[in-house]
Length: 103
Image (tube, rainbow, N blue to C red; front, side):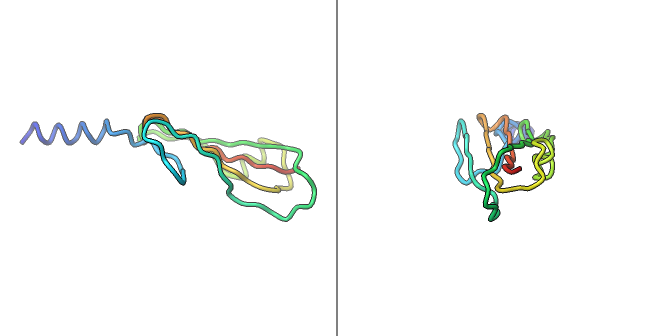
């Protein structure tokens, strides 16, 4: 019984729990980009701002991927549209980035 319990705990910790928001997933690697939101701004966006969060094994996660932080990082006052980028590596490392375009 102790062996079974130990094996179950080890499997849970080694199963690769680091995830990021993705409409599709890859078993070994994922690199996905997609839209979040858009406005009806008539002019072309001239600035880009990014903000990211990272995770290790789904146990440790840190960062600030808010739209507000991404806009501030790019010096953007008027947001035109927002995209996201998401990457995972073998279920061990994950990164989620918000990309804001505007002026």
